Length: 452
Image (cartoon, rainbow, N blue to C red):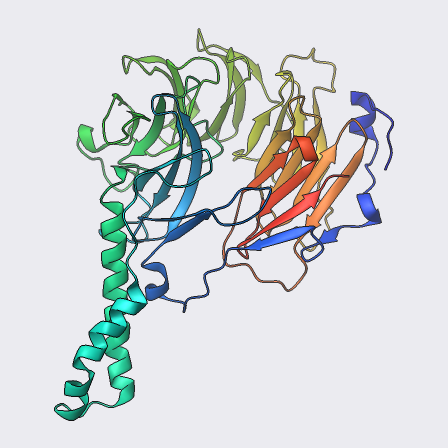
């Protein structure tokens, strides 16, 4: 692997060789954790949505978290200073709407990842056996039911008991309504005291709703997410993205389909700046600079950098062939460069550079003959490491790319042709100390790769 350090010009102009001489396919990883539920597919399988936790070093399961009655969609970890413990917030469905994923649960975890304050799980299979044994003779002798019919009744007992187990174990958990915003927001305030959620998030394009039922950001204390600290109200259509400032727990920015971005005072609920797009076209995403002085905002056919204090635009992305919707983006840790997806490529933009013609460059581009081209979409971009020396991107078809721009090498962890996925995943984690890259893939496996 080349060890020569690169300057920015070489990084942008020279093709990086692939490590190992080729892409590494799923199945060639160092290790794998299979998360797939082996229960029968269908409604019965999902009625007891569970999550498992394990330490990275041992990969042994240390906790099983049961509480959602429907599918679990998103997770975030947080440290809660008030209770001296970790918190895991999960977004999922509930009994009222199994697929809506509009219910938030907070789990308190100790330093070993074990749940604090839980109810004893029910021995569902054993209880079902006891129940059916008590009535099996009557069902067979007096009602002439055969063994298949009795087994179906037993399965009904199992489903009912699983549902009761979920409800019982969830009764001691902190819960709230709402969902997490999209496109890589910072959901926890920099002081670790609050979380932001979206409520009443449905679009108003088919009809306006009363003010109190319009999309709004709700700030809740991490110590008790059942309480509301403040509501940020004023948007009139779906809020796609919302994020805390990385340095100021009083500042939140939002992007909405109502044609506006807004910068809020999270203490008073006041809208400090309303940034309106031409013709009120849909807005999609944003990202604060690491120092919190600027915020990158993207809307339909418009990407710009704004001062947080004044709300004024100070730089606008100009690039031939810029996609109408730019939704996946990230600031570098140095705060002078931004990466963003642009259809079949990833752009590197220096918003504060002089207009010399090199302030925008393509650093990732799919070849037109690639089999990924017709379905490809970048769904996550992230700078890795404290200095941001590596850049990782993920495609919706499952493949992950990592570039080391100092050593000018790249890794490609690819889903082999013909391997099916159960869902899309945006998740990956970089462990800088061990140069390890962990990806949660669409076949419900966590794969461990080494960046060496």
